[in-house]
Every structure is written in C-alpha cells, then in structure tokens.
Amino acid sequence: MGVPEIANRPDSAAREAGPSRPRAERRAWSRRGVLAALGSAVPVLALSGCGGTAAGADGKDAAATGAAAKAKTQVRTPTVTVSPADGTKKAGFTAPVVVSVTDGTLSSVEVSGNDGSALAGSFSADRTRWTSSRNPYSGTKYTVTAAVKGGTEHTATFVTKSPGETFAGYFTPEANSTSGVGMPVSINFTEAVTDRAAVEKAITVTAEPAVEVVGHWFGNTRLDFRPAEYWAAGTKITLSLRLKDVEGGNGVYGVQSKDVTFHIGRRQVSTVDLARKTLTVERDGTTLATYPVSGGAPDHTTWSGIMVISERFEQTRMQSSTVGLGDEYDIADVPHAQRLTTSGTFIHGNYWAAPAVFGSSNTSHGCIGLRDAKGADDSSVPGYRFYESSMLGDVVVVENSGERTVEASNGLNGWNLSWADWKAGSAL
Image (cartoon, rainbow, N blue to C red):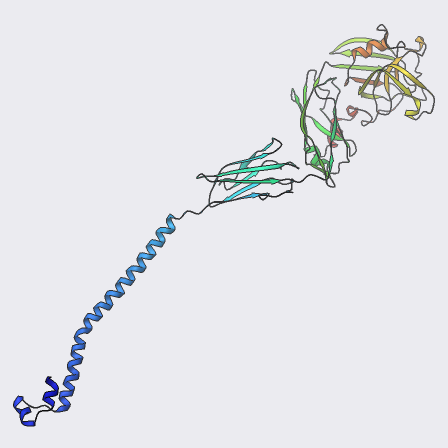
C-alpha cells in the first residue's frame, strides 16, 4: 500500500521518486489534506443544518396556525343554572325562581307546578337571565325547562317546603251575593297580622264602574274596603286574594289565592228620626214608605250614625245577658230582626209592646222596633214589610237618638269615618 511502501524505501529510491520534503512537512501536509477534505464537507453539513432549522420553524408556525384555527372553531357548551337548585327537596318560597346561562342565550323558560300552576317571568336585556314575576308556592313540586338558543335544553326540578303556621281571611259579603249600597268588603283574619302592609298589598278590591277603593284596618285581625261614597247601584265588585305564602308576621303565612265577585243591587237608604220616631225608606231616590218606630229609652239610648245591615233573621232569640243587661229580658221569637251593630243593636219587629208605643215613645233597650205580629207571618204589619224590602248591606241612618255616633268598627259601619280618616287607616 502506497504510503507505507514509500516510508520504507532507501533514500536513493526516495530521491528518484521525486524531490524530497522534510518528514515533518509531509506529516503537516497530510494533516492539512485531511483538514481540507473535512473542510470540503463542512458546507454540505452546514447546509444540511440550515435546512433542518428552517424545517423546525415552519413546523412551529404550522402548529400555531392550527391551534388558532382550532380555537376559532371550538364552541363552548352553554351552562344553565337554576335557583332553587335542581333536586332541592325543601326549597324556600319567599324568593323568585331564577334561571341563568353562561356561554349562551335563553330562548325560552317554562316553570310549572304539580298543582297545575305556572310561573310567568321576564328575561334580562341580553337574555342570559330569567326571573319569575312572583315567588313559587309552598309545598309544591316545580319543573323548570330552559331552552338555549341553538337547540340545547336543560331540565331541573325542586320541591318547596311547607309553611309551619298559616292564616286565612274570612270575607263578607258571600261570593256571588247581591248586597245593598252600604256593604263594605270586610275581611277577618284567623291570626293577628303584624305586617299589615304586606297583607294589604296582597289584597285588591276593584269595582265596575271603576271607583277608588281603599282599605282600612280595625285592629290587627280585620281589614275593610270601601269607596269614598256608597257604591253605585248595579256595581260589580271583585275581591282578589293573593295571600298564599304572604307572611302576616312571626313565620305565619297566608293560604289563599282566589278571586271572588259580589254585586250591588238597588240603592236603599232608610233614615230613623228618633225625635219624630219615624223610619223613612228611600229607594233609588224615591220615598218607598214611612213607618212609626220606637227607639231606645233615655237610659238605653240608641246609637246614632250610619249603620249597615249585617245579618238578617226572620225570627231569633234575644237575651239581655248577651249585651250586658243581666236578666232584663229573654225573648225566644223576635220577628224580622236585622243586625246593625256587633254590640247588639237591631232594627226588628215587636209584638209584645202596645201598638200605641210606635211613633210616640222610645221604650226599648237600644234597638229600633216596628210593630209586628207573633210568628212573623203577618204581611200587613210594618215589621214584616220593612224586612221584606231590605237586604244585607242596606244603609240605616239614625238621627236624634240622644246617643253619640257609633264606632266605625262596631259592625260594618266604616261610613261614619270621613274619607280622609278612612284612608289614614290604610297600611299602604
């Protein structure tokens, strides 16, 4: 092999082969040759390295571009939240139902109860929130169905707890009844009301033809409604009770949600003048009749003022002991009795007094008496005729009795208050 052979030749042979070079130079040349050979390969390697670096950069750009495109095309799933939360077994009933969505908009919301009721509500301006217009009822299972724009739907259920203690309001007059023009709408509550404003706000009374109707509290268990003047003949009155789940006070909640209608009949206002001892009946602007009467004696005077007939009995028992007068009387069959006050004032028939008493003397224990017959079946006597011409809610005005004006709370007699004083008794 070439190099070893040259290295082992005699000097003469080496000289014949060509000019001699120092051995060190030859070794240097050999190294330079190798370096040159290696150097000639560097550009190729360097080129290859540059090519590899360029390819890596292009890969990163491509990856970034792909990620951005993926981000643009990725759609977030809308998340619907319902309050009270899905599955709640004893949810509160003193706050509205709220449905909200993130990463989407609500297209519709339905909330229905197992009692057949439904909760209406409204959306926020951006339709990401829906709030019921009233609170859910107590003791009711609700199903919430919320649709999100784009087709997805969310369903939730919850059950509201039942109230511990409840109250109700008993109203006068009776539903679908017809009354006289003086009949207020009177509501008596089974429990004392401490939050009068909340309860009164939950009750409305409207009239056709329309007139302003205002409530007035008599203590904490009674709320009456009336207009400024007597109702117009033929008026239709609607009482709307929205007491269910309204807190009357101290954790006691109402139970009623209903509408009731009443009607006002003809206008009849009767005036009792105990100075003249007469009863004049006026109906629709015309005098219908005038009857002789007997009122309270000087030691048992009859209340004066505006009174409304609140009860009617063809015959009833009257006992002095029930009105604080001991055992002065006990009459089992008083005919044609019509109550004017809670304290015991009636306008009624009287068969036990002499006929001459009526129209000439005031001899009763405070009631207004008309001549009548025992058994209440004689249609010719004043007691019978006045009773037949009257109805619940008719007005009886007592004048010149020698007694002060009856308290507005003593019977259905709120007409004795001025309109300003009546309105001052409202909690609203």
